[in-house]
Length: 208
Image (cartoon, rainbow, N blue to C red; front, side, top):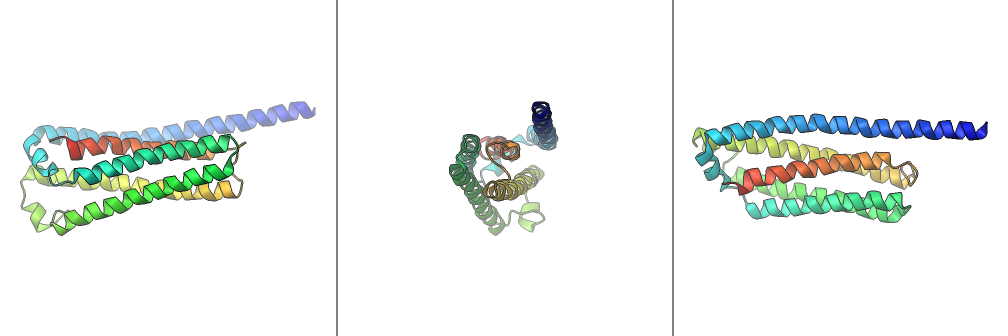
């Protein structure tokens, strides 16, 4: 009887974990639809205002964009290593890698703050007279830039909050070697944030 009870319990846990993973994938799919619609709008407007988009993109700092890309790529690596370390029972190493991921996320936001501040100082922000005096194509470009990168930054902040909770849960042993689905799902969300930026970077910074 004890064996049957243990088997049923383990199957129940397994179904819960599978359900949690499926739920996360469905959520990520809705996020892809959201950003996919924005990417589609970008493509349509870029086709209509190709020259103006190329001109406006020269206002962006490619170096800062590249640094942020490298930061997020590295954060994806540390996130994956945190999950691997926990699965192998190395709680301390998992916490170190997870803390590193959070620090990288913060660095990304700091860089984004300075980048946006530079644009604001040049008068290139939504509703400004300097921006509204530009051709329609450039106004649309910067509108898309602020909306898409701003929404991405919001996702980075949400990701940081989630990872901070994971940090607490691992420390309190609520997430551990035997139950790490929450950390895995958090990692999936963080990888999505990174993938979205991988598309944003060339679209706004590199394509002229």
